[in-house]
Length: 345
Image (cartoon, rainbow, N blue to C red; front, side, top):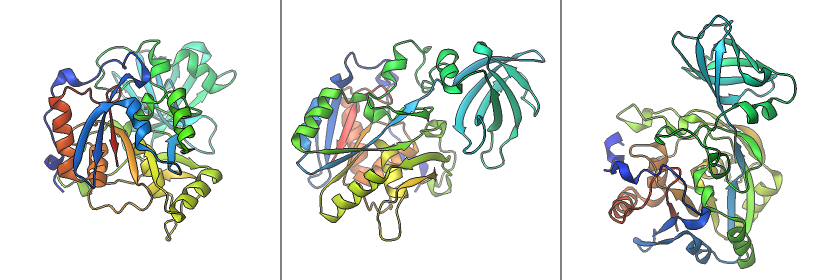
């Protein structure tokens, strides 16, 4: 379980800086675990991999414009990056802050649109994050949509554009709260979702508000010592019932992305039944993990030595996964959030 066991060589020019011209215009690598085979194709091919009765679980989180540029009342610029709203508290968020001098408790920050923040202090549970309470006239998220900037991943080396407000968002995004997109869902269009339903595929939502921890590097050699950042999730009653019914009847459950996978494998009782409700998950999936719900996975190509790659290796096997990544590099697939896609059967 060494960190370098999950490394691979990736030419920088394969890191996608922009989305494909069309949502469903990406390429698709299909990995068949039973056959040990790899088949390159195009994303619309994904429909042909499904059978009547299959269940596809999607993450309906919506990315918020989480980057706020402001100025301290005492002087000096500051960037505040929203991470997670604290449940039960009036617009108090865990945040990352960046300024020339550390933001101490009591620091007041002014933003555009009449938005104001006060730094309450460091968070004991999440090192490096601060609690910030916001005040605004009107609805906080509505003001945020006007003054915030889209939180593009750190490996996209360009400023955010207006196009990103549409394309760094799935077509089924409903529940605001994520600061990173569930990127496997970015390829889906309404016509493809309709084709899946016509095949006889049930599509059910859950919510995981993806946090910035998805991009944080693993800094320990023994990956078992890594600690995941907590993320808020919600499983609707109808989704839990549909998943449990599918498993009981021997039908396949597909997870759209690593985010949906983590919720499906976390929110279980001792008998392996998915529980409705909401909470916070910090589940870390790496090789040796026993999957109890997910039978198929749709996911993008991930960073070397990342927790997302480790999850895929746990599901498909490390050697076959890394072979798929080598093949993707050879065939010039595009990588990461705006890149191409992988279907694991």
